[in-house]
Image (cartoon, rainbow, N blue to C red):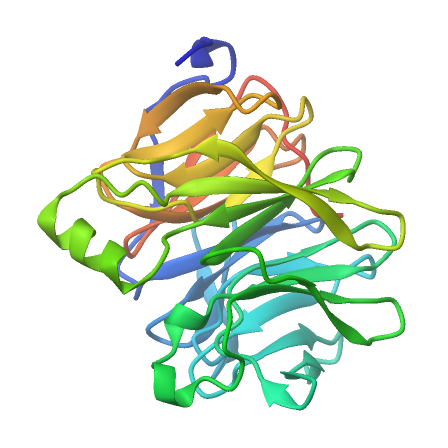
Length: 299
């Protein structure tokens, strides 16, 4: 392990912004100066303002999970439960379905999503989130929605694709791999080292297709937590939640350090006026940490 994260973090002590929700996920900073996050158990999208007030933006999100913004500022969400789709929240409050099927088959439970600068949308659909008998697609995949709205398989070479991030120049797509199969759940319960926790990387062609699948970072561990949500900062470093806290990883794949968290954290996002605030969703809460170096926003 290399590097010194003291040059990145003001402090490793988080500030608790709000707590007492269902399992929290999908933190997302908006250019208007507020943050949204999801309550998985309550199936609702929440808004946090810096005065501490939390309000409901949308109900019945189908266990809404990963969120991002498109280039018109509209919120894109992966929905699970019986929704099993990727949606867009329109400016009038209505919800449009962007992707629900591939080759006539319903997705399992879309998990996380990212938008490229040309409008291309990538999202993950890990099959293990749904019982075998309910799956219509018999593999876990990363899918791509092109600018015309057509849905394509980007890759089926990911065991359990979860969080997504793009390098600053968008030439590399990072995919968090949480586990291999059901045996990994048993390892977690036994406290054994799971060797299937990792981040994969793919080269991204101008047309959005992926190639050169490789392991970017091995995140094997016996500690609670798996590779999940991740973001990239302005210097190309990957911030990925994982075992024991969140990991900061150099563009080379070398681990700079692991910042411990007292609760398993599922996702994170950069925000604030200068993107020097890191928001996290551990347990039933929303936390933040201040940074010395800026992250990259979603707009």
